[in-house]
Length: 226
Ligand code: DX5
Ligand code: ZN
Image (tube, rainbow, N blue to C red; front, side, top):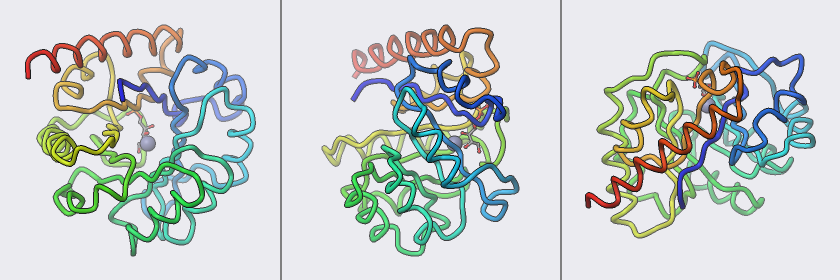
């Protein structure tokens, strides 16, 4: 799996979601941040809105659920057609059971960790997942500063994925931009979420293209240097 660029619609104009989704038609997926004012101190939207987003989006949906009790709420996002569903490890009571349920419903099963959560407990569970998401800001808001302290964790997870021999995506979310993309790809991430860097640009298409080109070049260098 090569580099994927998934813009986060958290930085889009929520009053024009249809048009805002058209702006990212050259992306791989639309990253949809669901927040419940409990797991994170912010509130966005839930299933009825995500269902409409799915209906009009030109690209598949990458749902990022920053919610309490994902065991109860996550499956319906798979049910309504999100291609990938990410829940937080810190919030899940039974992550393996939930991942299996998501896969059975036809979605990619993805698990996220906050900056202070270690990835080591996930290593033996990797066969259950299609993607691991490492947060590089505290979840809750767009436009925050990238946390460099998370880079070693990305490196360790990439090593674990390579050692597993499995085709698991490594997603990074938070503060990804022209100025941090090199570090993120060098550490081993291949799915890049960018909210403000894409929606804050005059041309979202140009921002996506330039992040993609830069990340692909860097990934090639990384492959060559090993
Ligand atoms: C933060 C969200 C992110 C956010 C990223 O809690 O999960 O997806 O939109 O925004 P930027 O790219 O601006 O950091
Ligand atoms: Zn997100």
